[in-house]
Image: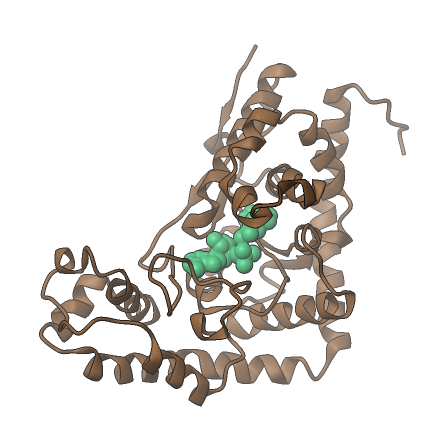
Length: 345
Ligand code: AMP
Ligand code: TRP
């Protein structure tokens, strides 16, 4: 038996996904999208996927799902994803994701799935009413990654547990079938904005599904709305401290400093060094200016791109073809390992 292969035995390849279940938030931008662009420019192969099949694990209005998928594609391109360099597509156009997910449903154990905190959060109190898809979601996510033999996955902090499960699934598959076929993927969770928090409650993450629109900044918000949301963001009356330690019990203050740092490509400590002793009356307008300067050009470009939906669909279709070229041979080998008869075509 060969056991589990470290990621390093496989050619480096980056994969990540975002659900088109609503618009992009500042959390998605700083925790994921901005970093996707940086990775693309590091010269490693990058594959970015709008995971529409994940989105429907909770109810999605069909018209809104289609719109959100296209708008998110526009957001990726506007933020700097170059669809020639990166592969950009929506999940349902590449059938290998669903095929490998089924195999992984048969590898993953009920006990593993029962520990997933995102399922518990999203299912809420009435677990009996949650979809089976929501429960199986992490196995589909493992399939998204491993169907490309991806070695590195940039995500926000909230996805750490799912990526550990992905490693468990790969390890068990490799063990059960006595192979080193699947890489053991490395999560890439880094930077000041790996967990951007709600503007109304520093203990909750900023999320596109939060009922309060004031809790988040949307990529499509106008400059005035962005400035107004930051002005009204919950904070405390203390001035900013000199050292990070001084933010320990100040979740909301810490969050705004982290956002500032991530937008400005600086460390939170550097931000404190500049603003130490100042109150939020001074800090918030500076943060608002920075957020508007960073986001407005992206949302303007997004709107322009949305004028030509046919072109967006063409880009996603071309991305899906390229993704399929990588995934199909991997899937064929996987079916073969599992013992399924395949006609030679
Ligand atoms: P989702 O919107 O749940 O599909 O998330 C897409 C990506 O954005 C994932 O990599 C998440 O970890 C990341 N993300 C979502 N919300 C946040 C947040 N509040 N802070 C940092 N990253 C986030
Ligand atoms: N579960 C991720 C989220 O909610 C989205 C996702 C689906 C993903 N498949 C993925 C992220 C594969 C990284 C890699 O944010």
